[in-house]
Image (cartoon, rainbow, N blue to C red; front, side, top):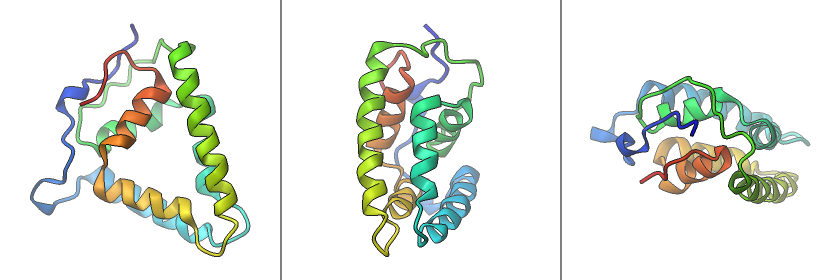
Length: 139
């Protein structure tokens, strides 16, 4: 029901040490947000809250492209799945803690974003899968 991506084709590691184009673009954006994070407000956390609350199509397409999978821009029909609600609440609470930690002089959230872009850990794609309530489980 409303499944948009095939999670079975997403590689977990960078092949031959080469980043894909989405990684390079995301690295520039998150790098800029990390620099802005040295101020009193974490823009990275605010964007994270927006993603958790609204679940925009551009974010899940970006996650799939980041992990090297095929992007499918059909709308997500599972917008109100109760299973996604628990993941959205959990992600929102984590972002709230990160927002509080980002008050310190070092932008924590931007650093985590840079790690996700460079290492592409499996937990991040699983979190995105849970927040968007997609029908199949990622690898």
